[in-house]
Amino acid sequence: MRTLLISPSYYPQANASYYPLGLAYISAYIQSQGHQVVGLNFNHMPMEKRNPVLRDTLLHEAVDIIGISGLTVAFNEIDRLIKAIRDIRADVPIVLGGGITSVEGELMMDTLRPDYAVVGEGELIFTRLLKALEEGDDVRKIAGIWCWDADRPKFTGEGESPKYLDDLPLPDLDSFGIREHIGLQGEHGQFSYHLTRLDAGRSFPIAASRSCPFKCTFCHHAGMGAYKKHDIGRVVEQIEGYIQTYGINNFSIYDELFSANKARVVEFCDLLKQRKLNIQWFCQLRMDQLDLPMLKMMKETGCNYISFGIESGSDAILGSMKKKITKQTITDAVKIVREAKIGIQGNFLFGDPAETQETIRESLQFQQDNQLYFCDWSAVIPYAGTPIYHYALEKGLIADRETFMRSLCNISGYLYNSQVNMTQMSDEEYKDWYISLRELNDENHRKRCTKVVAGEILERWKSRITIECPCCSHQQTLDLPFPFEQDENGPILAGPVGVQGMNVLCPDCGRKMHLKAKDIPHMQGVYQRFQRALDEIKANGQKAIFTPSLDRFAKVFLEDMHIDENIVEAVFDTRSFRENKLFLGHSTALIDSNNIEQFNDKVVVILPWVEFRNLIDRLERHHVKPRQLISWNLMFADA
Image 1 (cartoon, rainbow, N blue to C red):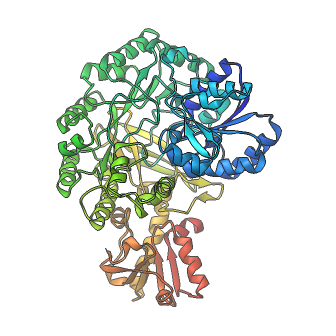
Image 2 (cartoon, rainbow, N blue to C red; image 1 turned 90 degrees about the vertical axis):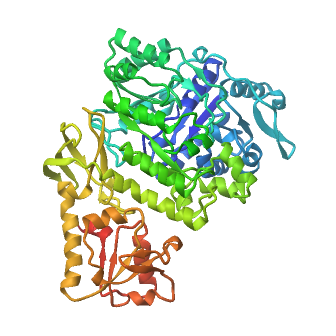
């Protein structure tokens, strides 16, 4: 059968944040069984191009069946895709796969209405489904799928998974645009607010294992079954082949857990040395499976960054999460990873059911004691399929499963508007802690700031800057476009543009440091202009209305920008969770139709804000004309 396989995107813009490696394995296997594949990877296209490409493919490619694979966070996008496909080719059956099918299967079938869904590792099950459809057999006899029995969804029971990963063919990377994935990445370094690295260029995805043998309560292995591994020799052979074919020497090992023991990592490093492969690589490991000799081998063979599951600095919470490590384990691991000069990626999670104000404070102290300033705080999210999801259902904390799953498709909206509070804290206490922890992330970054040695403006939104590591004094020079979200017109304004600095990895000692946005040469003009506008309000003896009542970036923004509280007349916001919160010495009021007239003939200062244009439009609709409007975001448009 001729099969169209689609990977939906989790972002509106073209991106290289995710490559559908699992779908590439499915494609390779069904081709080995005599089927043909047309691949569509929407990650490589901006949103406005996806529907036209889908329509063109469906109208001009003779496809017999369509497969879509994604996680539960793609629920809304998969819903949209299925409806779009039905409008164009209602005659072609649709099969879902991936993590979205391994939880809440009946809900998924009733809501998204695919013809079939494959549950678990898909190679064998999907191939059997294709064969049954091709030969007209009863698909209800195939284990491992959801199908329809009259008008009711029916699950046929657990299907068969590949026993040995090495029996599978190499993934079909080209059908899903591996060259586009490479091309979308920066050639001379990786640039982002979270982490900028000049020591790592374009990165290539590779898998050495599937699933994870551990059962943390907040984690779900997306129907991947038991932990299984590729032979390390085969993995190294793949790397050699990819170097020759694609000219890439930087590899991201996509595994949830690269290895559950040290021997496998040592074997990998030994083979890299034997074959004299000069690569860089990244992986995820557990902190209880490390020693200094192994880490030094990893560093020697090109590993300069490792992701770890830290999650908490409280043994009570680590126990509740079933992490099977202690905070002493973390402390010991951090010490030797730093001694090996390898960078650390990790997070702290807030909101486990056992979380209390005392355990948060314990974790905060632990974070400071170990100088884990760049391990950011995030919220525990009860993703469908996880033990804490079932806990939240049992406690009645999730009122409607479909509404909840759809809300997770916009993580930012979920985190600020509809978080599930699984702790014994009140919702207000919980929300206040979450906001303060998010603010703390940016404050912590500034505890280790880089020294700017030299800088010059290259273009309007690009500078060359030499920075020095505060830990080891190593210097590096960056040709830095900033802000990172730019199009042909300059910075994209919908957000706290130009406020968030960037974290940079030192290629020598492996420690992270922070570069403040205001220290970037071409950014200094914006900061100076905005400060002058604020100073003129005071010089003219005026007062101003300020909006919004900043939360996440408030402390760092006010550290870089002086606002005299004597010029503040009032503070407003549109977000209910900011109502009555103190900001600039004033209690925040919500903007509504009854008080928006207060903005008329007043000096109005709009601080960095995602919704700044919505407020400007709202003022115009109500025929409210401020005497002067000073907007941080518009400073970038006018620059």
